[in-house]
Amino acid sequence: MKKAKWQGWGPGEQAEQHYLVEPRHLAGGGDLRHVSEFLRASGWRDKTKTGGPLFLESPDRTLRIAYDPSVSPGGWTIHGAATAYQDEWWASLGRQTPVEIVAGLTDALTRPRSAHAPNVWAPLQEQRWRTPPAAEHVTAVSPDGSAWLQFHQAPNGQAMWWSGAQDQQGNGWTAHFSATTPMHLVQSFSAALASDEPVMRPRGRVPHSGQIRTTSVSVLPSQLSAWQQARVAAARAAAWARNSVRNSRPRTTARPHAQAGGARTHR
Image 1 (tube, rainbow, N blue to C red):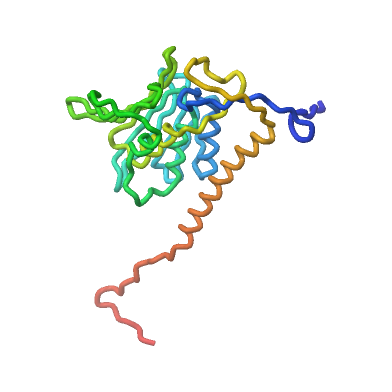
Image 2: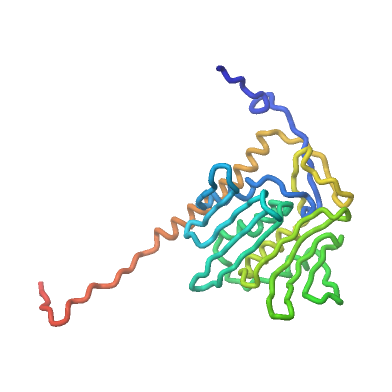
């Protein structure tokens, strides 16, 4: 059977209506490929089983990311195995966490850790998030009051990071991070959470909320593809650069030692 060519691509393609949504933390989940394709391009292994939830593993097998909407509460789970320099850690983010905010954390997993000491609260302060003086735990709240980040410490000493967003209708998401989650990752998450840049959603995927602002834009399918490919290409280039540096390092091997009492040969 001859397949008809879809006329939406190439010459004569039709623009599609999308919306720029702000604040981004109330924009809804979005396209999972924003997260998964970047990780694949960064060298992560796709271990997703047919018909199963999304499952990705880092090249060194110490990090695992899954997305499963079929369980309760469902959403993203991230696990970091214990290493010589890092305790075991975990994070969970709800299904409606915008992928752009999820990517703030997951993209950072592919990059070397900065030499600068991380400051989780700095990105929030730059965007004028406020710290309620009467809060029981260290907390930052967005200017409109619909999003928060909190370091929660229970009386028994257990601690964790807690974040989320909720509109006046009760729609939203929550995220939890173990106290052992590396601080630079929590900072990358907070930067993505606090960003004032709107995110794009297609028609029909914009949440019904009185607290969001939308701007209608017409986008060509080829433009969407080009933006997605640019992000993937950047991930591949960074992965190639990391591998090149790793492979160019001189290898040092221990000199073989002569057996005790063995004769040495002189030339």
